[in-house]
Length: 124
Image 1 (spheres, rainbow, N blue to C red):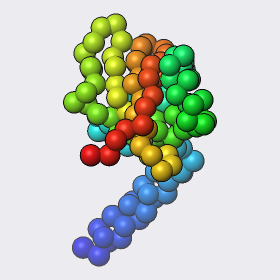
Image 2: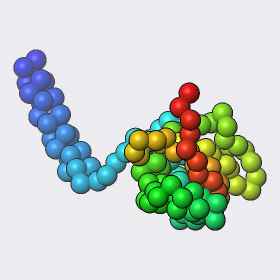
Image 3: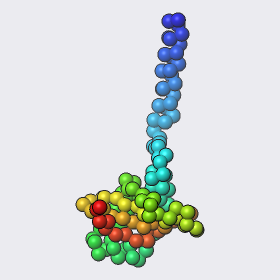
Image 4: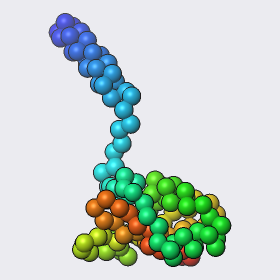
């Protein structure tokens, strides 16, 4: 009986070492929820800004790099979004990179995510 626990412990130890060796340097993530999957999808595509969204960022003196932070930590409003629209889905993503909550209307096509509109969301 003691030998069995010894063999089990030894196998368990080597299994952990092998898993850490193969996955240790990887940037593995677990984005299994709908919000995480959509944000991961938006981050992986080329971003294009509409004139209206660029005007918003310019008038509010906000750098467009906040879009990357919103796509990393934001929340997708699935109630407003049109997830089955053809040819491209439309998502409303909001995030709070600074003092205000910014909401983005994003048209998500095959290889491009277009930020159609940006606005300051009123907290409810």
